[in-house]
Each structure stands twice: as C-alpha cells, then as structure tokens.
Image (cartoon, rainbow, N blue to C red; front, side, top):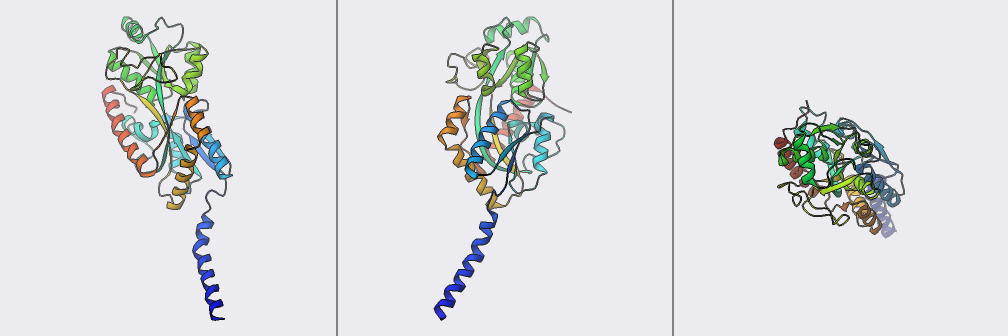
Amino acid sequence: MRHLISAFAALVMATVIVQPVQAAGFPDRGVKIVVPFPAGGSNDVVARLLGTKLSELWGQPVVVDNRAGGGGNIGAEAVARSPADGYTLLLTAPGPLAVNQSLYAQLPFNPAQDFTPIALIASVPIVLAVNPSVKATTVAELVALAKASPGKLNFGSSGLGSTNHLAGELLKTRAGIEIVHVPYRGAAPAMNDLIGGQIPIMFDNMPAVRPQVQGKTIRALAVAGAARSPLFPELPTMAEAGVANFEASSWFGLVAPAKMPPDVTKALIDGVIKVMKDSDMTKRLAEVGAEPGTLSGDAFGTFLRTESQKWEQVVKTAGAKVD
C-alpha cells in the first residue's frame, strides 16, 4: 500500500511539473506576421512563404498583415506595442531594425530594445534596373546619361531608409552623379511605375526584379552585391561595371515584441529552424533569388547590431536624413 501511495504521489508531482509546459502549448491559435510594406513586394513574398510553412508545421493559421507606411515604422511600432506572447511577429527588411534609427530624427520605438530577435529568414541581392526606354544598356552609359543631365533623372524606392533607397544614394556618391529620389509606400508600387515609365531607375530586390526582367518589362544593368547572381550570371556587379567600393544587399528578419517568455521564444526559433531546413522552402526561396538565413536567437541579435553600424555609416556618407 505504501508503495502504491508513493507511486501515486510521484505521478501527481510529475503532472504538476509537466502541466505548465503543456499549457504553454505554443501556438494554440493563429499567429500574425506583420509586414511593414505593401503586398506584392519581396518582403511580402518571403513572409507568405514562411507563413505557409509555419502553418503546415504548427497546424494553426499563420496570416500576413501588411501595414505599410513611414518607411516600415508603422508596422514595426504596431508589433513593438503588441503583447509579448508570440502571436504577433514582424518580418521586415533592414529599414525598421537597422537603418531608420540613423535616418529618422525620432522613432516611435527603439529597434535595439523593443524586439526579441527570432531569426534571419533570407538574404537577397539588390539589382539596378531601368525602364527599357532609358538609353543605357550598361552602368557606365547610365552614369554618363546622368552626368549629361544633372538632377533630371529620378530613381524610385520602396521608401525612405529602405536598402534600395540607400543603394541609390550610394550610387550618387560613388559615381558622382545627381539623381532625384522618389520614395513610394512599398516596392510594388515603385516597380509598377518603373515598368510604366513614370520613373526611369530603381534598385530593387532580386525576387521582385527577376520576373520583370524575364518578361522584358524592365532592363537589369548590374547586381549590387559582392558577387554575381547565379540567376543572372551575365550581369556584372556594380564594382565590375565601374563603380568602385559599391556593395549593397538586403535581408528579411523575423522578430517578436520584447520581454517574450523564454519557452515561447524557443518554440518560435525551433519552428523557424525546422521550416528553413525544409527542402521545399529552400527551393522556393532560391526560385525567387533569395538565400535561406542561418542565424537565430542571440546570433541574429548580434547580426542586427552589426547591420545597424554598417548602415549608419552608409547614411552618414550619403547625407540622407528624414525630419
């Protein structure tokens, strides 16, 4: 009898210990991924790929909520102010997490303190493209065209502080030309105007550029990264095209609000790692020109700090500011 009572007591203790972990059961309902840019851009494409795979893994709906505006600050602020329970996440390009603190006079959130780093989801090359009506088939010809008509050519971007905005500013500095920045509320509307000829020049991420180049609605001149892209091996890098010391790329990272419960943070990181190792996810990212990320948790946090320092220098060099 004594042994039976002891065994029952042990079972009760085990239940008490295990129950809170089971009760956490993250996620036990739908998860929302906020994208701080309009639908249709590279950020949105990657978010929807990730959301689909996480939904399959968790057996819970994962929806993408596009909250555009303010160079990504509106969506980022919404997540920073959300409950720290893991059910509202931010998947964003560098702007809100690594650029805007150097570009904007004031932010409604603190990128270094108001988020919990989850994972680097993907990195993507940036491509310099023009409307087919532009009389330039190389970077050198584009630079010559800009020098012949200072301040007459515009370049579009997904918004102030975006990596494609800063790539344009870097081109101005490195090539010694004067082209005028036209910010949009996201990459998709900017790309639409590039196709339509309302703007002649744009730097944009490979996932958005590739189908348009293949459809001959725009013309790609160079990739802005350190190496050529396997998707367009014929395209030179900006350095190869004659613009020295030019390197710019973009990435997409997933963060949650600050002060997350450690077990929920771990569940999120573990889920994302599983998805990123999925061969179909890797294949689908490669198809749009993105490379899967390999950093998570503290390592991703270190990456964010390094990126903030890098883009701070670019902003200073370009002299870009938003009041």
